[in-house]
Amino acid sequence: MSTPHISSQMGDFAKTVLMPGDPLRAKFIAETFLENPRLVNNVRGIHGYTGTYKGVPVSVMASGMGMPSIGIYSYELYHFYGVENILRVGTAGGMSQRVKLRDVVLGMGACTNSNFAGQYNLPGTYAPICDYTLLRTAAEQADALGLHVEVGNLLSSDTFYDDNPDANPAWRKMGVLAVEMEAAALYMNAARAGKRALAICTISDHLLTGEATDAETRQNSFLDMMKLALNVAVEMDKL
Ligand code: HPA
Image 1: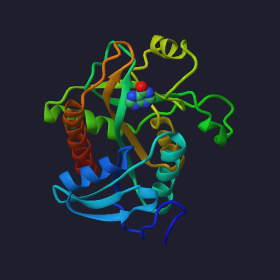
Image 2: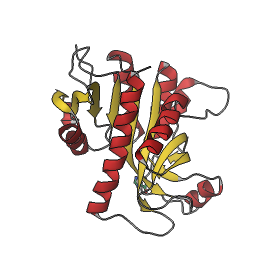
Image 3: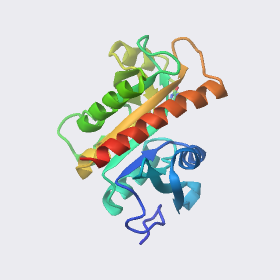
């Protein structure tokens, strides 16, 4: 079986899939953390691997950048490959004083400037939220790892380069912690499919201070986030 964007067989993906944006990061996670990683997809260079972590089957596949891209891949994983849990592991730009460079943020909700929800014909606005079991498990596993996490609202933006200088301050006033480009579409697809999703983001740059992480620090904070996500996958397998 193949879908338009994934050339894998049913059963090739584990119950839980970690999704970084970058295909090379998917490859890195598979080669660094998974036992016996097997390449299960490489359409458009979107590396997807399945292996085990602490003996539990886990997959990792890139989402690409932006809501249309993660919208396609998460839809196909949930609906055609029996995937139950998707953990986005990505970067975000800090928007609030509550978050610092290298912090890990669990996206409890995801505001958006996108019209992704338009497809559902709702008679109002939709509030995209993560799955509570994944969120609670991630918070517990972060404690167990001694890793500080912030929990709150993300902004999933359709634009990285935005023409409106008033946009970010307006979101900041509403308590949004960080901006990224995928979580809201992932949360909506999960809700519609009756499945679970959570975005875990490392603050790679800060919009208030203009600071950005250098490559080495970025890599180290990624490792923390990935270990957290992998431990969540192990816990979810026990449910
Ligand atoms: N904007 C959107 N997505 C991001 C950013 C940002 O500043 N930093 C990391 N991902």
